[in-house]
Length: 251
Image (spheres, rainbow, N blue to C red):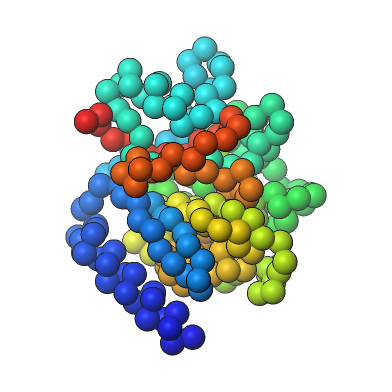
């Protein structure tokens, strides 16, 4: 236990040097280790960074890949600082749950339980509005229906108001490469991916105890991928559904 605490303390000492106490930093990615498992995390400040979701291009055709998003952004003179798969999707790549892009709702909120990880309630919704990002349990979200410029629903929630999802077991045997998104106590958005198979319990504790996110949402497993050009990383694979990412001016 003490060794894990020292690792977390060292990590945040390094992060403080990288990002600075003022929080006035550009989106950045970094590697970390938690309980002998390697992870990569990327942080962005919704107040200053351009965080978006992408599904289709202007002609209605699926984007599906990091390279396709990069090509679309080139017309704006922008590029991806980082990106990851942004929520669960059907075989045709359409979102399983609530999805909003550029203020337009493409899929309603799903509040019923069901099979698979998505239906393992409570699940949640990531809402991006001007200058802020929030993670809200789906039924609470449906009661309020906030105005979001971008939104994606996935599940299960990993961390809910500081508590782990009640169905997670420390000795759970289901292990996959997993990715998720959290909001820390300063309001920063943090996406993270495991670089080795991990169960839900360890993944959720990494978000809560290392990344200090009182709320975090599972995005997917097995197909999870990360595009982090500053780390020389762009995971390959089959076309995805929604893609969550942060843009920056082209070099």
